[in-house]
Length: 441
Image 1 (spheres, rainbow, N blue to C red):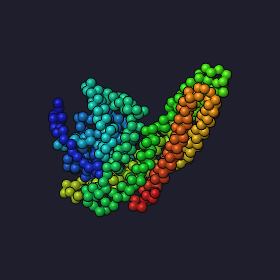
Image 2 (cartoon, rainbow, N blue to C red):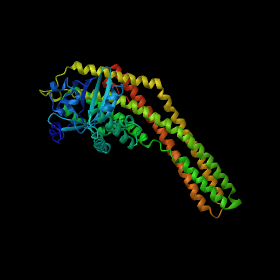
Image 3 (cartoon, one colour):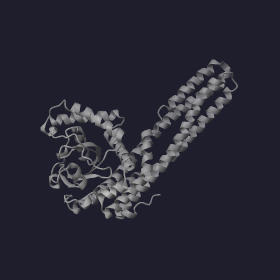
Image 4 (cartoon, rainbow, N blue to C red):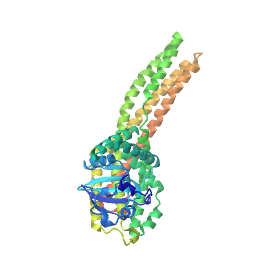
């Protein structure tokens, strides 16, 4: 055990769900701006933090691979998010979900209290496994590479194609969980500043407006429009239907023809749904990206409010200019979000969901026609019950398509609402009228 590890107390340095830890670093990782919550939780004085490398807070139980991934990402001018455990000056620790946003020649970082318990607890176990791999190497660079590979492997085992998809999904879930536990009265009592309280109230209204559409978006992403197996299930039904029809000879000829039609339709359905899933999944991921952009901007704005709260004598001594500079830079994110929406024509892509939903309703009608035709024909036979059991499976798939069409229609409404909200907040941010910004019912 190193001397550094001996200083660990095993105790948590707490902060409230309403608070946000905020800092700005230059491109070398040197801290150039902080807020009061950062100072309070880290237990360092401002003059100890400002000008020091952010690695001052590194906890020995934090895998090097996470930081390698972070630096590779943010130096490529991309945002990064992830769970991090930091070490306070006295050896206490504190867990955060951290987001790092590159802006010009600096990196803005805000950290919120982890509230998405199921994934947070799982990622702690993942980090333990990653550290075991890291320990197999001696040199820091080799440790980072081993740790990085192990981390990516474990994220893939969780069902994500890459780390970027993972952290954005976690971020939106953490945001929603924070909303569920956030107490505006507690936040106002902590900050004890009427002007800042008004800003907190405004931001809370904005966040609450995002809650329902974002919840539906996350649900749609997690369901991923479960289309796999639909065509295969119908093929199996058509095969069983054909076998039974052939067993009864000439009297089953019509039913055999119906089974053939069902098989042809299942081939067409399988091909169609494959393309639809890719289309909808891509659209959902784009909106994950846009929602992340906007929420990062708003959370950075909230984090800046926690500067020198309660008029503490040891409150952060950085100038308001540093804070204002950071906020003006964040406006760049809003502009890029607005430009992306307009450039990609997402409003028109959303309209395509309605046509996809209509297509699924037509698929449903085809399956219902096959079901009714099969039941009419089989009702004349002595073994009608066995045929009806098979046709009931076809009817079940028809109901699934009906629900899928409804889900797509609702998703379209949700995405249109999000576009409207993003555009409203983007325009109002540019016009500097925050208190009248949100006009969404």
